[in-house]
Image (cartoon, rainbow, N blue to C red; front, side, top):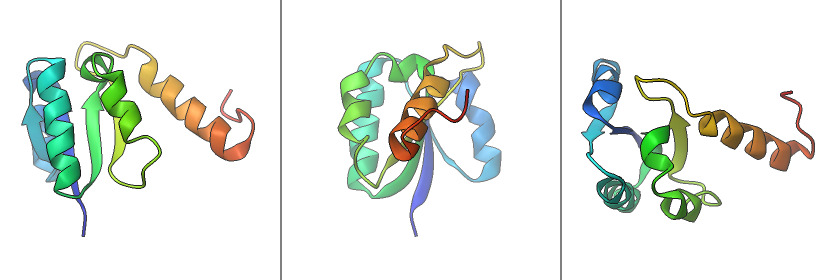
Length: 103
């Protein structure tokens, strides 16, 4: 069974601990990229990462985009959304369906 993890700043991800999700706090994009690569080797199935850190490491996020696992899902931080998570979902749906059905 695959595990679920979340990566981000402490204030944004700490609440996930109550849901039984593995929580990893980071301070910069480099640390977030290292953590994603480590978790991918450990066969974590889903990695949630705050948009703020994902925007700093697009090459790492893209590296796993076409793989089955880990699925990397962008989430807003506690300060709000940058909009890239929703844009990412729209792009994935358009790729899968052939048209953007969410707009």
